[in-house]
Image (tube, rainbow, N blue to C red; front, side, top):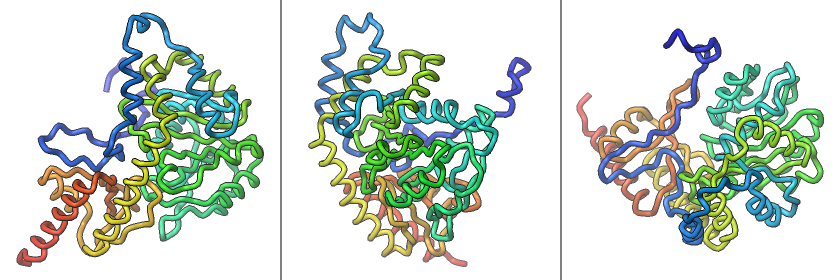
Length: 359
C-alpha cells in the first residue's frame, strides 16, 4: 500500500501467474508449457536476427507474421492482429469492445485473467456457472451483455465446445463481440477461425506459447473481421506501437511455418495425455475429457491441496487453484512420457503411504 497509488491501483486484484520455482531436478507440470520446445527453425531464425539491425525498431505492423497467419487461415492480413502474448491481445480486446454499460459474460470456472481485465478497465462482469460436469451451457449466456468471452478448450477444465455451439452463440448475439480464446485449440479442438468470414462479431485469439513451444518469447494473435482488427490496432497504437521485437517476429514466423514440427509435438502430447488420463483413473482420480495439453483431475477421497503439497516435496509441481468449485481439483500439464511416469509413480507412493497411515 502506498499513498502515491491511484484509487484504481488500490482496487485492483492482480492475476497470479503459475509459479516458476527454481528447484533442482524439478518436474514442472503447472503452467502448460510445451515439454518439447520450439521448432529448431525458430531458434535458427532468432539467431540469424541477432545482428546490427537490432539498433533499428521492429516492424510496428508485424506484417510478415500477419501474412503467414493469414495464408494458413485463409484470410487476408487485414483480418490478423499480433501482440505481446495472447494476454496482451486479450487485454486490448477487453478495452476495445466491452465497454457498453452491460456486463461482460464468461464462465465461473475459466481463465482467471478475465475478471482482472474487467477490474483494470472498470468493466462490469457476470460469471455464468458451468454445469455439474464443468461444461459450458450455451443457452445460459442468452442475457444482456457487453460481450462474451469463452476459452475453448476451457481452462482449467480442458473441455472443448464444438463449432455448432459457437455458431449458436454468435447468431444469438449479433450486436456484441464474441471472443473465443483458443490458447489450447491445437491439442484436439476445432478452431472457430473458419467462422470469421460469416460472423463480423467473432474474434478468435491464439498463442504461440503452448503448441509452438514459445512461452518465453511472448507472441499471440487474433483473427477477426477487419473492423475488429482496426479497433485492436487503435488500442495498441495508443499504448505501445512496437509490442513485438525483431527476435520475436523472426522466431514466431519460423515457428508458424514449421507445420511438421507442430504436428509432431502436438501428437506426442495427445498420446501422452491419453496414457496419463488412464493411469490417473486407475489411481482413483476422476479425469475430465481434455482437448488441451493438460488434464483436470480430482481424487475420490484425497484432498487436492494435500496431493499438490506432497508432490512438491518430490520436486513435482502441479497447479492447485483455490475456489469453491476448483479446490478439489488438480490441473496437471502433460509433460514428456518420463515426466508423466514420474508423476504417476509419485502419486502411487503418496496414496500408498496415506493408506498405511494410522487413523
